[in-house]
Length: 287
Ligand SMILES: NC(=O)c1ccc[n+]([C@@H]2O[C@H](COP(=O)([O-])OP(=O)(O)OC[C@H]3O[C@@H](n4cnc5c(N)ncnc54)[C@H](OP(=O)(O)O)[C@@H]3O)[C@@H](O)[C@H]2O)c1
Image 1 (cartoon, rainbow, N blue to C red):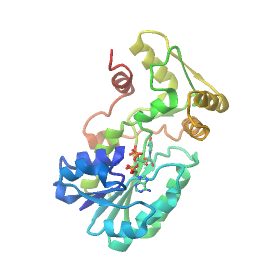
Image 2 (cartoon, helix red, strand yellow; image 1 turned 180 degrees about the horizontal axis):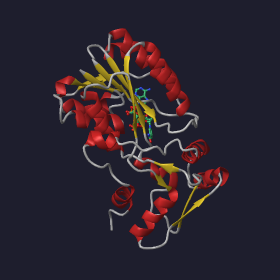
Image 3 (cartoon, helix red, strand yellow; image 1 turned 120 degrees about the vertical axis):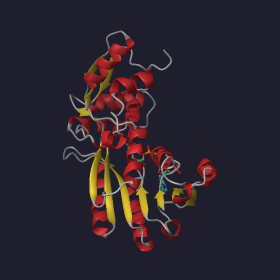
């Protein structure tokens, strides 16, 4: 039995969708907080179990009979490490054989508050637990680009605090397909994989792609963190979120998300989505 947590979220649900293409539903379990959000999974025959990462006894009950478990990391601005520890401890208590953890890409030593810190601590805790593990160092989602630079085609200029930093974006569905392949594949015991895109793009590259697609000049201007935060706050983001978004710019500048890897490509058996393809489908689909 393979159990996927975060099954009502983006990555978890998409991973189950891919598992269902190769694995009988009776061998797939889903951990959810709210059963009412999982009716589609129940209808497909997935064994839906309910527990919150903060509820240790419920986790222990939910993990019974599970061989492989995908721990989809908890959201930022919560006590991620304690939640992850609960999942790891509960998995160990009931004899889960292999735990996969969705961490973040780290192509440099940059430590991003709210993300890298708790991921590093979780990885260390998992390795010390004695469980067989696989660490998935997930790249930055293409789907997160809109948070950084807006979800409309920029009028003339992209303003972000990433300097010349590059990001090897990866589409979340492709990450999910790769994750499902790892969960059902052999030989991934005690391994760590960087699941980033095959190509890394600077924000100048992004501006160039936008220009080509829009048929007009769109440029990139790297700005300091403070004016970027002010711009996001003016656009309606809470201060804390705006500051968090600026941190991804700092992470990009520091090369944390720039490393490319062909692991996703190999697991998909094809080239992952390119920047041009993503922008075209996301920003220009009405054209
Ligand atoms: N690499 C990246 O670019 C990137 C971007 C964003 C996030 N992430 C990280 O990757 C994870 C997965 O991404 P995603 O896009 O799938 O996020 P998502 O759509 O927000 O899904 C997160 C899932 O985790 C569940 N969850 C959160 N707290 C929980 C708790 N205390 N107990 C049990 N379940 C809990 C949520 O349950 P509900 O459905 O009940 O809310 C949801 O199903 C995120 O949680 C975050 O750690 C990575």
